[in-house]
Amino acid sequence: MKRIIALVLCALMLAGLFAGCGGGEEEPTTTVPLPTTTDPATEAMVDLEVPEGYVEFGTVDDENIVTVRGATYLLNAVGDTRVLDKNSKVTANLYEGKITSVTDENDESFSVFVGAYYKDEGRLIYGREGNPADDPSTIDIGDLNDGSTAAKITTTTKKTTTTAKPLPTVPKVTTTKPPTMSPEEEEIKRQQENIKNNPNMSQAEKRAALNLLSYKVDKNGIFYVEHQPWQKQFGFNEIYDRVSPLIQLIYSTIRVKFRYGYVYKLYESGDKKGQVMYGIDGKPVYETDASGKPIPKDWMVQLWKGRYGLVMLGAEFGVYTKPSTQNAEHYYSAVAEEELVMAMDVYQQNFLTGTKKHLFTRGPESHWWLTGFVSGTFHQNNNKSEIICVANIQFPNQEMLKAFETPFAAAGFKLGSPGRDTPETYLVSGNSIKFSWQYIDQDS
Image 1 (cartoon, one colour):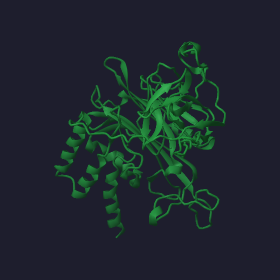
Image 2 (tube, one colour; image 1 turned 135 degrees about the vertical axis):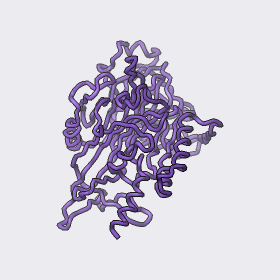
Image 3 (tube, rainbow, N blue to C red; image 1 turned 90 degrees about the vertical axis):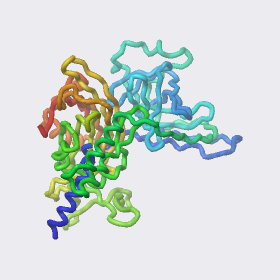
Image 4 (cartoon, rainbow, N blue to C red; image 1 turned 45 degrees about the vertical axis):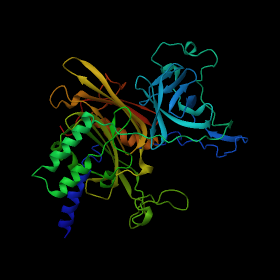
């Protein structure tokens, strides 16, 4: 009977071929409470909880267009200092209706949080403050302002009080599907047809494989997997990597395994099934052994980059855990409390011409599976090292970062100055690790 159950589970695992094949206590990113009054004659006071290290740099209107008020140094997706000025063309990026970052005309992405809402001016928006000394440009920040406002480069205080006008009604934005399919959508349809007509796959395997093709696409044409996809329930097993070539996934991967912390106990049934259980002290409840001691937890952060299907290039970072008492090498997708803040800049190198092209930016975002894919193919057949990832992962504390760093360095990374042109290097700053990855492949 156990063997039958195991076979059934293996069939179900096929449904997770992309689940992980594709977040660290950061400054709070929760949206500031908005005024609830609807009486135009009443002015509501909003107590802004401004995270340390964030500075106000502009406003966002109802069309999610950012107006930068003056020159401001900010940190981009991978922790480099950049400057935005009043002439920068900046748009806000939404996730599940909330602004999570902004992107400038150079595809630089900056993490933000939104402040109070003003009817005439828009939403106040704050970004991670950079250090002027780290700005690679030689621009004098004083020359970037319009003369009416001083450059805002000092750390914002924890609390400020401001007067806000009533929250206006924001029109609901609707989108329509374009009449023609993109090359990526055509590729997904082609893969679906191949699966349906594959005589070597069982019906159960076909259903599982068809469900894999569940990408979303943002306004910039970047394909990604939503934050809570159905694949999350399957966790990750190395067998997924072994069968990935069957559906044209050609990628490099790195598995960083380490032990840290404990296993969160989850509700097993009812309307809270799968959610973390909390005690009366407000802290997560741990799974315990027979003596009542918390069970240590094994973690795996897995990285992927390469070709997905025939016309897509991309990368993925996944976070997984399992009880250390579990011998089976099957990991479970990280729950919300275990997510890490991750970001990636992805490039493609053409070894024939020596050029390197920026493909896309994803993050920074608290996630268990950060993904990104765009239209493209290898210049040379199956040359996975064409894809370069410059990335940043933020951990909740130094203890967890150090637990990760040891096996990460053992995989082949050296201390250095990570960037597009310095592969296989990493740098630790605070609770974050920035790295550049191009050639390492643990499955090669």
